[in-house]
Image: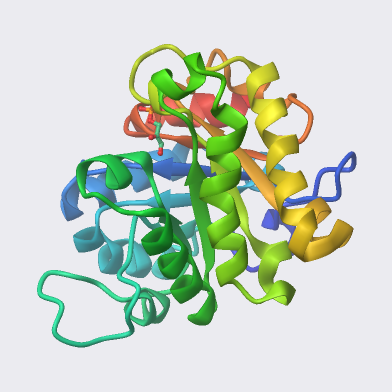
Length: 270
Ligand code: 13P
């Protein structure tokens, strides 16, 4: 297969005009050898129609990026390389960190920012997440901004307020003419890794709150072009229901993306 041939380019949804995006967030799993083996197996079982259905981004740990970049290039695999995080500054004395320009140089297309694990375990604030999203845009990549409420916030009816607060800061940090490129992942904290997904109706409601937030600064065009993913206990059984939810353009998949044959099935079923 030639990865540059039009036959393998994702075709936008005829209903929305937006290109679907299925993203595999491996979190801290798969060393570089496992990453290569996983992608080779995934590629072997996917068909050209899966690459036409959606962009397929893979977000391995940083140490795997160079290996996967070389693999995608040498074997002409039409996956998009993704990262899970970056630092907000371009360089300097920040021991242990990785900057957005470094990721761009590796051919990364999408960078997840504000994942709830980073907000919760590493204390990333709304402002810090906004600064990271802006850094990703400055380097010519696309941020996948994660938003979502905790169980406690959901039970106190604060879901909409949380989504708006998390997203407003990001929207304000990005040039208005870049807003249409943004990807926002609705990942309710209680649904992540719990085996208890939100409902497609919850996801659709979140998508409309997200677009209402974008429209204020970006106008109708940006709000229509922003892509919204759902994430949190997505599996091969529920993927298609989320993809069919109004306003949902893709999925951000954790656990179910680690096993290549299982993930290929999820993509086929989506
Ligand atoms: P799970 O798919 O394991 O619930 O994880 C979701 C997630 O956090 C993706 O970013």
